[in-house]
Length: 389
Image (cartoon, helix red, strand yellow):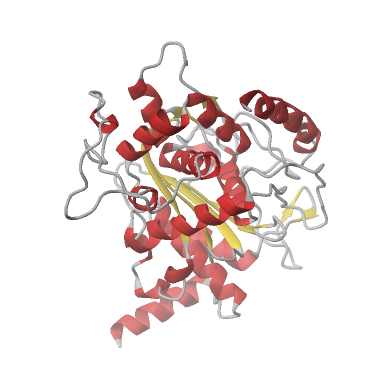
């Protein structure tokens, strides 16, 4: 089975390499809309929606203008509706748009890969609970997370809970006991790591530096599966991964040019339709009772909170240096219309994290969709008046 998957991945990379290499270059910074209200690249109209793009650019700037990127993609078409960033790339040492930077650490977004593998191959019931030693914060070097413990009076931990709480010990145990390094690597390749992904623009490859199976300990493999590996991730790849899950596991090219229709040879699903539905279902946990709850708690987000889902990630990165935070998800999780990925890196002081940027992006998407969107300044003034009244 693993041999067949490896052959499939090599053929897949060859099939899409021409498409991935034939696209336009994303600029370091986008121009303002032209007189026709279109944002252009190299004189070509883009799919970017000015109201969403402008709102997110100004929102990030108002929160300290950290290193940040947010991408919003329409599920049915793969059209990119927004690709906004914070601090200009040339001011923090990047030679590409922040959305294309491939040295952000994948962090706990990698747990989505491990979850997909467990659901697809192990047919894991997301609500089956186990007792867990060692807690969730760390993958303890003593391997205590590998030993079973009785489920206490407050219950054990299931895949659903572990995903929502980003429980590191649970994922380390899942990887070593049920999956194995080979399976995790296969699914990481399915989800676009270490290979080109289809789009009408050029995307740097996100590197997967997997542990050596001959020399790695159980602790190393467990930590890798939990998101502590040397895995780089572009925000664009993260959005593509969410797009595949939103489309019931079927991969789709990303589009940023209005008049392009990148074709793609028939491709097997990244995961099965049933596995994609289960994965989307557990994504709600992060927003409702997990690590993204605080970001969606504001009354402003009450209309979208019950329908949003995704995964958070937090890890210190080295390029750029600082605490990197992520949110990658979709809305509504039952029948997704839009996916979102947001990443930010804390500077001298923390101001805003990825989940807060993502919640704002889903909110403004919903406002635009329902014809309620004002300019960023008008929305800000309206909220100020409401607080005073």
